[in-house]
Each structure stands twice: as C-alpha cells, then as structure tokens.
Image (cartoon, rainbow, N blue to C red; front, side, top):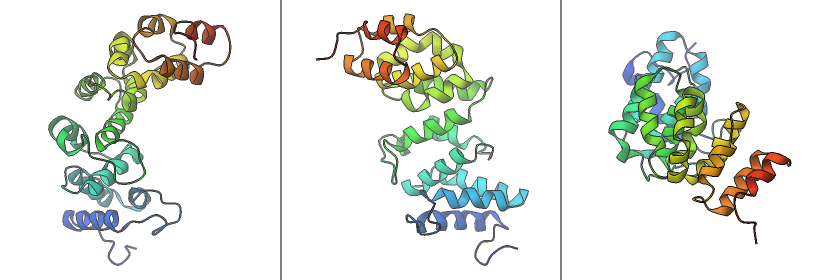
Length: 233
C-alpha cells in the first residue's frame, strides 16, 4: 500500500516526491544509516512496481540538470547506487551538454571534489563494453586534465584496451590516476613496468612512490618500480 504523501501515480507526483525527499534530508533524519539523501530513494526503488519505479527514475533523470546542486547530486547518487535504473541518456547528456552545471560545483554533502567528478564516476561505473557513444564520451573525459582518476576503474572494466593504449597520456594529464590505474592493471594481470618506465620522469616522485607502495606488496616488482624515481628524503 502506498503511504500517504508517497504516491508516484503520475510523473508530477514522482518529481515532487523525489524533490521533497532530497531537500528534506539531514544526517540520521530519515534513517540513521542514511549517509546521503538518495539512499531513501534507493530503498523506495526496490519497493515500487515497475511503472512507479520507472517514474522515479525519470524524475531523477530530470533533476540531473535542475538549478539546485543538492538535487543534481541526489540524482547522481541515485543512479550511482541503482545501476540498472534507466536514465534515458540523461547522465551522458549532463556531462556532454551541461558540463557547466557540474564543473567546479562543490558536492553539497560528504564527497570530496565537485559534481563533475561524481557524474563522471557514475557514468564510468555504468559503462559496458561496446557502448560506443558512452565510451567515446568517457575517453574524452579521461583526457581532460585532472579528470581521469574518478573514472579510470569503470573505464578500464569497459574498455581496457583503450586505457592501456592511452595510459601514459592519461597519467601526464591526471597524475593522481596512477594508483587506481595500477591497481586495476595488476588486478587483471597486465604488465605495469613498461608504463611506469615511460612516465616515471614526468610524475611527482612522492606521488609515484605512494601509488607504487600502496598497490604492490613488498617484493621485486615494487623495488624495481621504486628504483625508477629518486629515493625519498
């Protein structure tokens, strides 16, 4: 049974309910375990029938370009948490056509970085091999200075060959992508030393050492990689 004030029998009702729940959230307010406003929506999604769930997803898609950054962030987090919720291309359009709504806009609750980072991360996590338009968009994002780190894991799952062939360029533009890139390469048993040799002289040594030490256990590979940059101190 639908609770009073919780109806999603129309597109407008769904939009107003989503907007209201996202704006009325505060830590521990709806549920002590909720750390973002979108978590209530995620639980609600699992309870709805197919038609109402579709209206909920469409409402979140509409809010991706709302003037209010709290609503945009809530919508991003809903799609990040419910990866099978259809967004009808709204996430990709947000990055491709409305980047100004996300670029440099601080995430309004507990995330580091800006809304563009969270949007890119969500898109990459939802990407699948063979999804050419989305992968092309993520390729472009990976080559924007400073933007590769949040998307690299998802992009590597969807298009490892492209990342490997562009890894040195990606790292020169986004040095902080080194650690997630190395982690995913070693997870897939891919070679890492040729890449490290090609970029060691171009990345900050402290960052290089930190990433290598975090990813590789003590042993010959770690020692050989660390020898590529000057010793600390």
